[in-house]
Amino acid sequence: MRGIAKLSAAQLGEWWGVSTANACGVLSLLGQAQIPVYEINATSAGSCPGTVAALTDVSFEHVWVKVKINGSWYAFDPSYKPHTFKSGIDLASAATTGYDAASYLSSAQSGATVTADYVQNIHRANIRSKLAGYATTLAGYLRANKPAATLDDVLAYDAEGRLRQTLIAASTTNLLYDATDLIAEYDAAGTTLQRRYVHGPGTDEPIVWYEGAGTTAKNWLYADHLGSIVATANATGASTGIYSYGPYGEPNTTTGPRFRYTGQQLIGELGLYYYKARFYSPSLGRFLQTDPIGYRDDVNLYAYVGNNPGNRIDPTGLASLGAWAYPTASGVSTYPVAPQSNLQGTSLGNLIDNSPINDPPLERFYPEQFLIGGGGLGILRGAAQAVAKGTGAAAARETAAFTEISIGAKATRNSANQLNVGLMQSQTIENLAASGYAKTMSKDGAVTVMTQGDKVYRFYPQSTGGGVLGAPAGVPSASVSILDKIVTKLRFLGE
Image 1 (cartoon, rainbow, N blue to C red):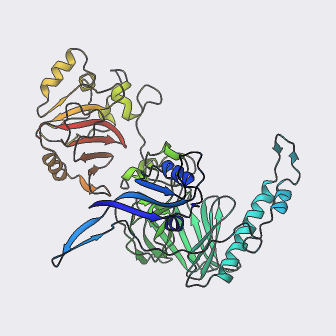
Image 2 (cartoon, rainbow, N blue to C red):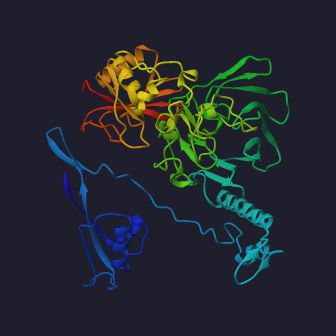
Image 3 (spheres, one colour):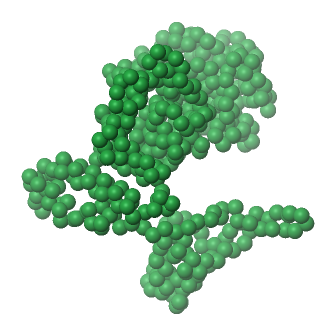
């Protein structure tokens, strides 16, 4: 049901926390947010920019849901969520953080060269010390002045950006690090050791957890191929816990060891994982903050490992990596990495597109077949590479050897090759499942993902372009990846 939602100036100011003294300013703000305005009224007539008049009301087009219950029609707003407002805290106040601008500036410039154009040799140690002191003072202020019933969870960070303290349900834990590895937990005073951790040479590789200040309560941590802690055992080797996860890291329990999914810290009371640069929600399957490195890893700034959690990890919260390329202290992967062609730096994903015909045959790396159905296509090996490139007599000879699958022209120079599959998409999925491929769904349930080893098929409900030539709108399509690089796209001729 479509209609108009009208907000008074007081409502807009309360809900959005903006001043309504200048209607043109409000209109500009709405325009920057790309929020279409149906009507806006002010205390006096005029045009923007230029007119200075207070906002009286603003109207937006809105959609309500209309339902019939027990013979009566009801309309409700699906976007409405009850909310309450809490007064903020002035972080620049000496009472809340101990911040003093003159003192902070003086300590930062201690020993530095200051000119009108630049500041050289700024005192970084003093800055870190001041920031840590402000955080400690703020945490103390919150404990003393905010009742437990209204105090939300507090997380404090050190000058290096590491989570150094948690205040959850009136329980405070201080965290100690060696670089990015958490090595100890202390009580609120920071004097009593509560537990210690020993790490292996790799990234996010906790091995042993000691409970208490001594070394007798020893617990071994066991990880799977993603680095997720799946079991614990005591000093005698007896099992003390089994831990499992959903496809996006949903834990079977929020109690147990601190290190859990992909070796990250689990803040069990919050149901969140601490991924160093930001927090991750397994129930949502996404990060709660945007990616600090912007779009360099994914166009979706909140996405977790490109929605491929079964094969990829994100040790830093900045960029995803293939589980086979898990970093170690020496920088050498403990899993196979993508093969290289004789063009230095050319990965498998570009091997077909850009490499010479005499590249080393791919079957030496991956002898398995793409189990699509029909005749079954080997991995573009030998003369089949010539077919993919559409060159010479080899193309004609090899094309005749295929049954249900033929290789079409490439859409662009850098796109993967297209394969025409003489089956329906559902039949292809069934064939892969019968051949041992594991089936999962994307978080939104729209994409079917079939995985076996380092090969991944992604089946889309309709053609989304991307070089799948000849596939009209609404026709399902798919992509085939090896080592998370797309090597071909599929068009289903049986649809």
